[in-house]
Image (cartoon, rainbow, N blue to C red; front, side, top):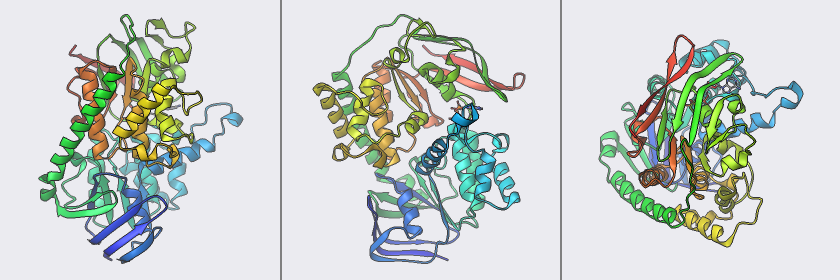
Length: 485
Ligand SMILES: Nc1ncnc2c1ncn2[C@@H]1O[C@H](COP(=O)(O)OP(=O)(O)OP(=O)(O)O)[C@@H](O)[C@H]1O
């Protein structure tokens, strides 16, 4: 049955949605772009009749609506952490197994097996949800949503975090599914938008501004405007960074790992890793989902348990030679999904940025007047001054991520570690951060260690690549290096 919106205005406690006129036909998937603001959750709530309608109408019955989003993913991970049984089982609790989670939503064994095959989860069936990599987690979230046999699917950036191969196979799978399952797919990247979705709805701050087909969208002036707008903002960001620059000096190497290896009881992730980062070098780390990119960054940052069983030198010190974790962390700024997950405190947006000066999760020290002034400048630049005192937990996932990027950059660390930094950012936010990173790298304001699965995210100033490739002999990953400078 078609769903029709006419002159609709709907709201919840935090946001408002306005749709003048829109018809969603049963077998017609839609791509949804939002220039500013998260739209997927709002649309899903509207379709599930959870928003208050203050004007206009919505006709038709979407039935059971399932949403797959980074916010949902964060919620499930938080639930899994809340159920942590480490104290009782005397080992780290990896959380519910992938298979158990899918089964919880599905009484049909065959459907569960089918989803596991289609979403390439076979080798992860028994893995605990909490230890999965980002891309693995995203595929499991989709499997859980489909296991519930929805009548309508809302997907928020379903390809983000997936490697190139998995993006392709997921696109084919969704294409097949779209013949029988109505779906709205929200994108923050034009390059993710597959050819088989020909209908586009463009939103801005919760208001539907235009409906069009793919060819009109490809030449739409909004894309050009956004690019120009974000470049101007990034210049502002760089001026701010330059103004508060300070420098710390280290001899080579900044970081070195010899014969690096990470293994768990059931598998080796990578081995034979010999890698050195010299002063002034920026690196991009590449490889498929689950190859160990975040694990390696965890070894550098010092929060991976196997960082002491590896031969690591960092900032001139041998790891394990009596240095404190704080001595290391004060020279590193980090953005990653695991940090985002750890940031579960309810401090204000302003305090999140300030916490970057103290490397803390939440703020427990009195910040100086100068630090507070810098943090306010960041909020202004991110257009978030009006939420300065809002609790981090109440903000949209994308706004949270922008704050974490600012938190990492604010103290101008020697090493800036960016593990898929754009996840959850809207179009404008992503371009803003990308341009700023490009400028930081070009001017050597920090050394970048950068992970992204998208070719379009490549930074011109990064000339060094560490790539993980699967090795049949060890049944784990080894690395190749391509050094431009
Ligand atoms: N405690 C653990 N026990 C078993 N396997 C684990 C554990 N912790 C992590 N893993 C596995 O280690 C692998 C590497 O994870 P990592 O997050 O480093 O991958 P990644 O390269 O960053 O992937 P992605 O591109 O999806 O972000 C994953 O397959 C993950 O399931």
